[in-house]
Length: 366
Image 1 (cartoon, rainbow, N blue to C red):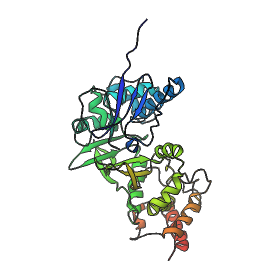
Image 2: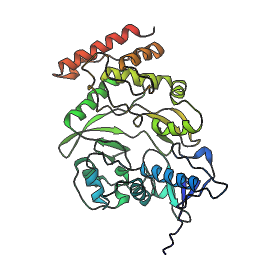
Image 3: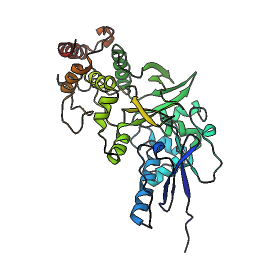
C-alpha cells in the first residue's frame, strides 16, 4: 500500500506566513487579519474529517481561482503551451497555480511548501517573470513551449477575453477580442472619463496589426484588489452586508459605477469585475477599486431602461432605476461634455446615450 506524503503549504502575505494547510486538511491560522478574504480555513481541536475535507477543498478552490478559467478565449492554447491542456478540476488547476506559487498581479498573496527557500521579493510578478513574448499566446492563441513561470503573468489573470501583460515604464494590460468589443471598450472609456468617477483609462494599441485596448495596472506591492465575489465569502463568515459596506466606504465609486454602466449600456458588471482596493500594510479595504471592463458596453441599448442591474443583487432593479437612485445620492459628476462625433456612424447608439444622459440630468441633485 502506497503511503501518500503529507505536504504542508504556507499561505504567504508578502514575506509573512499567515496560515498553513496540509494535504491531510490540517489547518493553522497565524495571522487572521492578513488572511485572503476568499479563503476560509477552520482549525480543528479533534480529528474531524469533515473539517479537514472542507479545509482542503477550500484551499484547492482558492488556488484554482488564481489562474484563468477554461472559458477564456485561447485558454486551450495557453494550457497547451505549458503542457496542461486537461486542467479541468479544481485540483488540476490548483496544481498548476501551485507550480508558480499562486502569484498574481491582483494581490500579494502566494504559496510555498513549508521549508521551501522562496521569497516574495524573488518571485512576485510586479518585479519579475514578465516575458513580453508570451503575449502572442494569450492575445492571438499562438502556441509555443514555455514554462509555467514564464506564463504566470497571463495565466493568473481572470476574465473571458484574451489579454496579456506587457512591461513599459510600468505594467500595462492589453485586451483583445472582436474588433467590436475592443472599439466598444475604447469608446465607453472615452465617454466615462467625462465624469469624475475613479476608473481605469483604456487607450488604443496595435499588437501584431490587431487593435486592442491598453490600460495601466493599478495594483502594486502597496495596493491589492479583492473582488466583490471574493469579499462576499468573507462577509458571509463575518456577518457583514457587502452592499451596505460599499455604500458607506465609497459612495462615489459605488453609485458612480451604476451611473456610468447605465449611460454606456454595460451588461457585464458581474461580481468578479468590481470590488475593493486593499491596503497591503493592513489588509483592510480602503475604497472600491477603479472601475474597469467596458468591452460589453452598448449592449443594453435596445430599451431605455437597460438591462437588469447586477450590482444590487438580490434586489431586482433595472439599470435605469439604479442610475436614477445614484444621481439622487451623488449627483451626475459630469466634468466635460461628451462629443457625439466620437460615435462616428453609430447614430442610434449616440441618440440613446444622449437620451439617457438628459434623463439623468433631470434627476440629479443640485
